[in-house]
Image 1 (tube, rainbow, N blue to C red):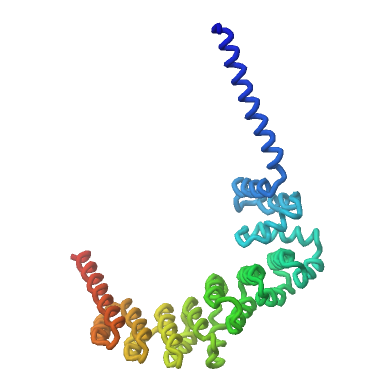
Image 2: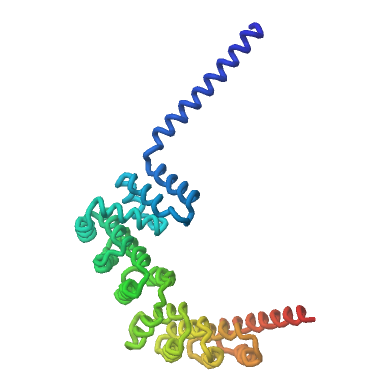
Length: 321
């Protein structure tokens, strides 16, 4: 084969390769354009271009208005969707489908229809959505129940928290999952937990005491938790002590020292953990006494606590030397 023929063949091969790549690119673009993935990439492009600046709302709303209804429903019903843009999607979705139709589906539609309708109504904080969410939370199918749990978290108010806490009382869904959702609430729920604990020895007082420790300290919170240190349930005594320490309540060290004589070993172990955070002579004296505890777990915890205090004090002394 001559050199000219070889070069011509090489050029022809390069052209064919380029044409093939171009054809695949065009096909990929034609197929991808108008898909849910294209809808999401459009949102990402708008975020990069507008951020949170002026004009972002109009741009996002325009993107939602141009989107197909099924993409709006899919986006707004995802738990990980960005709340502001998901609310826009819900607004436009409800405009197209009608609020009354959404309420009907949320109450009596097929399971996935109920989830989508409930998410749409929750995203816009519709006034009638909370009773529907309470019903969905008790649904035997986990898809609907856990979706309702997420939606009540989106509500983030005392009414939604009350629904979740009543679900804890009724044994609906694992209490730990509901508690984890309540921990993410930005609304201060201390007054709600205090009111529930003051009603008497409810069976969910462990979780109210635990969640009370995740809020802000107040004399009322301290007083209620202090009363729970004498509760008949050892688990409640333990969590009340832990919550007092987490709130930084006055007298937490003294209460921990007192609970070193609790009849249940894991309450005494919790007292050791609390005392470890004080690192003062009073705490050291109390921990030293715990070295003679009747239970091995308490003795080991006290040994570790004293060693950690010793190391911390040694490190502090070295820095000041």
